[in-house]
Image (cartoon, rainbow, N blue to C red):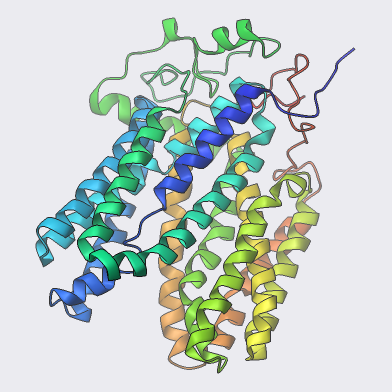
Length: 466
């Protein structure tokens, strides 16, 4: 008889805590709310600041996919250490050599550091959870990590002003550098049981996934540690990863899986479609709050209400991951309608609807990412995740452009309402698919299925029953 524990094993809980710690330290950056003031203090014009932001975005776009390929070739944990170290160097340049050139170099380093973490973090998290027989806890773990990230951002924002007032901008920069260094230490503490570069053959095709050993005890963990946790071939059969040929092979492997596997392709497109719109709209939430006629002192409270909704969405992904595509589409449509209604109301009370909508967007965002990870079975997990990241960045830039064009014609409320219309189209597409066609729900694991016995392996090493 299979006995399932009501709690995940200690190793799973330890991994989830380390993932949350990494996410929190990554965003505990006191410079976030103040770096524009730092630039202004050193004479930068608005146009020069805009050019820096554009350089930041362009760097992230250019490095996103190559960093994912690199994560599949080398240690993902290594990239999770290097990323915050590069960001720390960039912040140090801002503090020690404040000038346009130093600010530009800092943004390039920050963009590269963020791209190194993107893809590698998700891939490592999913594969390590799968190795422990807890792959279906991925959405829950990422939701909690997102909540920690948002809490850290809020704490850093609250601490920035008093630290700057008491000790100056150099202290703010020093605290931000320290957070990055601690984040690198947290990255080094993450486990990784895979063979870097394993799984891609010389033709660029993905090796078929090896069957996972039954159970999740010490013997199974040791066996899993000898192969790529994403389903790649054994270490002995792996082709050594060397140079550009190996990178091209991994990229072709990931792209081939996206092209040739409808489930992966649909999951990737869902991630892009869900994230791009609200990922851009969140930058304009303060402007929407101001347009309601709320006094300046109340604007931060309205913004806080929205981010409270986002945090709640992160914590509710456990039940939501069980939804089929139609139910998920209905939920997404409800979120879009709540956001549109709240934004069009034109009063501060409407932010209750906006907060409810953003709760749904964050929830569906995490669930969509979990389904993408569950769909991937080849060795290019970080590459495919980075391809999704590239799509998100490009689509988000398009939303920025649309917002700029629309805001010159109408107020912020109607712009919000118009830009959430694509979510209704996504909901219609999801509603038209049967429950088992793509976007299938991730089965619940009773908070740690696999802890009490074996689970049949599936092609992605998720630990789910097939």
